[in-house]
Image (cartoon, rainbow over all chains, first blue to last red; front, top):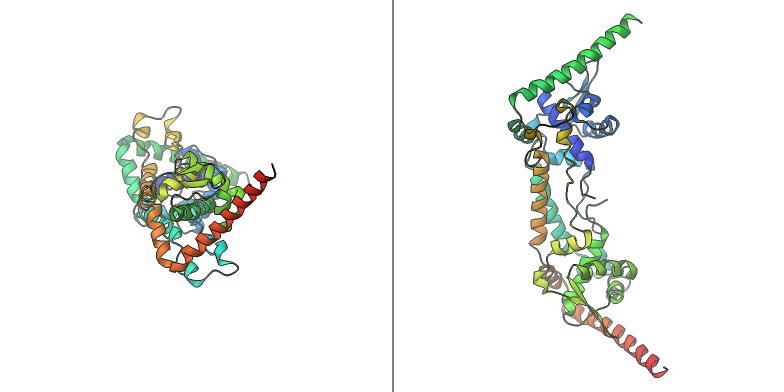
Length: 178
Length: 178
């Protein structure tokens, strides 16, 4: 099993659609179907992203999610922490104090400062987190955008418009038959 | 839960005792009791470390484990990979090809090269692994050694000698009564 779960992959891909959609909200169901993933699963991921202040929900027939901050200000680390909950690389149990030679009480020098093994893990964790913090959603959206042909953005917008119009029509029919 | 398990902490601490013991082997039971951890659990960890060529088993009454390489040549990354099995930071499921707009077949441009999200994760993973690779068991043993008073190494050696002598005596008694 990988250190980061598939939730990070699902969340990241759907956040990239929100970068492209700008002020036009997208529901988590539309995002999930556009990305070909489970809507129920994505809804849970978006609850975490909303709680972390990465996305904001808007109400109404055309309601959904928009980014709560500028895409250039949301780092990959923000998204990972929001979804995975700031999981440490290494959870030091301080077993250095349990040496049989110490008996019941470890001497002060044995438990002073950070354990030397933990210190190495903390440096490695910082290197990983710094790398994740150095990339924003805007950076990745720009890299993805360079790969896609110009017609792709229009195709996606067409797919979204058809979904939104279909929902608006259904809503009108429902309000007429009320 | 942390990314790395407690097995890494147990394995690392016991490998540091082997750095200090040099050519004198220590059994995984003695190592576990010296460190105050479960001998059964540590035996499983040492099976992995032996398989990865980090420790080597020696036979006999005074048998046990020694480091299979120079402590300066065994990196923390070697130990982590031996115990955790080279677990990736992020296991890309390539969901970029599942966009609803693509229909049954994703176009070549959509799945060419490394996914831009995966690329960020690979860079973060490399930064973490480089940091773990930059520290050897000798580096950490040296940092720990600087914290301990000179008498500590003698106390540990005394504890080990008493264990070894007691086992040798038991063995002599058994061979006499055969």
